[in-house]
Amino acid sequence: MSRQQAAASSSTAKAGPTSGKLKANTLGLWDVVFMAVATSAPITVMSGNVPISVGFGVGTGTPATYIWATVILSIFAIAYVTMARYVTSTAAFYGFISRGLGRVLGLGTGFMVTFGYIVFEASIIGIFSYFGHLAFKDQLGMDIHWVVFAVGGLLIIGFLTFFEISMAAKILTLLLFTEIAILAIMAFGVLFQGGGPDGLMPETLNPAIAFSPNGLQSAAPGLAMFIAFWSWTGFESTVMYGEESKNPKKIIPIATMIAVTGVGVFYTFVSWMSVAGNGAQGAIALAQSANPLDMFFHPTDVFVGHGWVLVMEWLMMTGSFACAMAFHNAASRYMYSLGREGILPGVLGRTHKKHGSPHIASFLQTGIAILWILGFWFFNKDPYLDVFALLAILGTFMLVIVQTVTMAAVFNYFRKHHPEENFWRTKVAPIVGGAGMLAVVILMFLNLDTAAGPASSSLLFKLIPYIAAALFITGAGLALYFRKTDPLKYETIGHVVLADDGHGPVLDEEDPEPLHPIDLDDVRAMERQHATGDLDLELDELEREKKLELEKD
Image 1 (cartoon, rainbow, N blue to C red):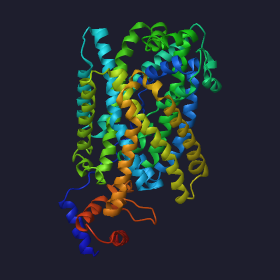
Image 2 (image 1 turned 60 degrees about the horizontal axis):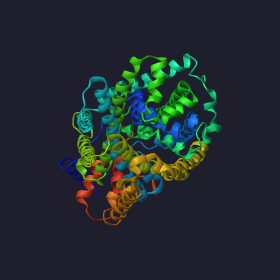
Image 3 (image 1 turned 90 degrees about the vertical axis):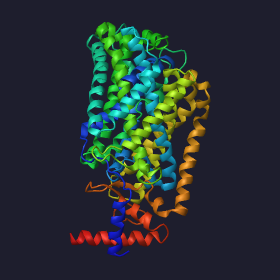
């Protein structure tokens, strides 16, 4: 390819549709931390998951399960962020697996995780509408149908995420701060007054009791452990904000470790105080009652005051809204990533000229979530037992499998690249973290029915494994098709990253030999100009020209 041809490619790129660029250097360290923690939804997780574990898992040993989860997920995060130091891409899991285990496996799991994030927003908006319906009815006497809250919430999220990511970060920070604050007020109220009828119950923090009944007739440690790990869903989203962060290779690893360990310490403390505040028998009785939320309302009422119970009801609503918004951001960025690579329609890979948001992917995500909600509403389903439970399990099923595969990808990536990296971070942590996540996958399979509750009899629940398999086969099959028919598009699968100078997305290849990064717009131009031909020659010549230009500069 001559310099004139390269210039022609450049002009063609400008004339034709170009890949959008997310707004770089927008998010600071704490913006990323709060946006990732928002996806974990602390108030929703504590009020929803802890009673299940206490009432039907391991009783008062529930806080110990969060200690186990914190340790294992911290080891997972060490391996995860080590790769994030070398790969800055909104593709996150999809990009890591494509680089570590190949594009075929990468696109298969990429379809799985994208679908998982897509359904998570609808899932969380389900419990948002449930909390909203209760709060308005109990405190204002207004009986508003849950579907109004759900669709209204999705439209508001769609509007807010149209603007640049810093606006979403500010909103999520405010909402997250309030939900953390109310949980902390309850927990410290119990702590400072010495606990409930059985005192502070420090024995609940002994990791060994995480596998015992602890007040129940029989233990279900598999369910309890799965519930504990489920509580961290979304922490890994820190990596997908790398392209919009300031100094991503530095702050993304830090943000991820804060999100994992900080959340773990907080979950352990709050679950401990919720048990201690009610006492051993009281905690189990409330967890198994018709209103398990009383496991948090009761100690708040007793140790802090009834007014704070009313506040907590509203913050359960706003906290779940923040979580849904965070998952909306994650889903739209995965679709944007696949769109800019040409895997999904290229229009999804465009960004707003002013705000730098993936606005078209965001619009599509809003539409998909509304369709999910209207579908459940049409079939007269419950927003909590059906919308939230079913879609959360569907999304979690996809996510934990992909997380496990990611550890294998990290191990294999560092087996071939960056031998100077620390042995613990690149060999030991991926193996231990992967083994831990594999155990979670097994626990998930064994306890899906129990976690789903009444919804386990539904057709959608029974189809979950088949949906996952279909997504993987579709993605992997598409990658194989591109490898044969469109090698240039195949090259881009999971290999588009933010350029080191932050100017935009580039194709950055490392296997079989490192390739000088090529602007994604140049790749798109090559696709239009060279529908057939020798891809390796084209890439090699363009790489040499880029190097010559850099040397002249």
